[in-house]
Image (cartoon, rainbow, N blue to C red; front, side):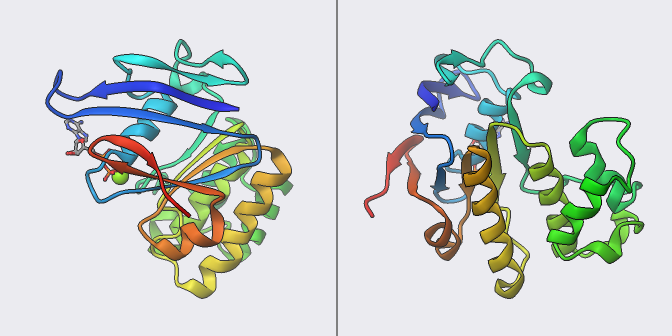
Length: 212
Ligand code: ADP
Ligand code: MG
């Protein structure tokens, strides 16, 4: 279980206060919605360790992760944008998900790009990819990291539905198979409906469970 337990935070010492509360079982996909500025990315930053909460706890399998620095947290995160190193090849960007020293043509990198329909792009510099291609490269790397907590911020934005549908299925299948605890931010209701077991909305800085 991933438990976000009465987690509070504010950027400015009080004016914009957040209070997050949710729990996610292994293999479960939770949708996170709310208008721009609601606090979705803020919650991700707290879980990933880029922000420090004022109070509350984040526990994985009963143990707090709050003391861990970001690079040691059991988290793999896809940011809303700017996920790639533009000067590196597609393959090199994906290889980073497996840790430094992994070759850009490692068979796991090749397989991950293949799943995203990007085999032909492995040697291309990230700077020369389209927006949708970049998004899929970043997703391939995020999934390859294989951490217990998977945070996806608008993973399907910029992909047309024909491209997005099989990738959505792939994400769902991998979350189930690996028992990841997955939170997906999307403003596209269709994505959330197709993917999430449950959905929370951030309303007035608080996580509220959506009625089905
Ligand atoms: P969302 O991802 O749901 O669009 P964010 O979590 O990015 O929302 O932002 C939530 C609120 O916090 C917004 O009002 C935003 O302006 C504010 N905010 C985000 N980052 C900062 C920051 N670094 N300093 C001050 N306020 C911030
Ligand atoms: Mg955001």
